[in-house]
Length: 121
Image: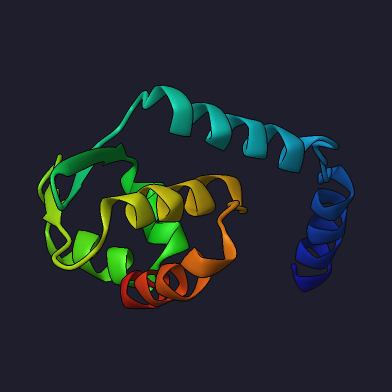
C-alpha cells in the first residue's frame, strides 16, 4: 500500500505544470496606472483639506501599513477616511506613488512629502 502511494505521488508530480506570464509585471503596472487615472472599481474615499480622492482598498493596503490597519479594522464596504493634517497635494502624490511606484516632485517639496508618507506609511 505504501509503495502504491509513493508511486501515485510521483505520478502526480509529473503532471504539474508551472506557467509563467512573461509580461505580468508590465501588465500589472499598466493596469494600476489605468485604475489610478479612471478610478474604476474604487471602494474607498480619502479626504484631506478641501479635497476627496477615490482609491482602491487593495492598493492602499498593499502600499501602506497605516491604511492596511485602518481598512482591516473598519469593514465598511466604501469607507471615508479623513486624514487630518495631510496636505491634499501630498495625498495626490502619495496615491500616484502607491499606484505607479514613482512620483516627480520638486526638491523643496521632498522633505514635507516624505514626512506625509511616513505618517501614512
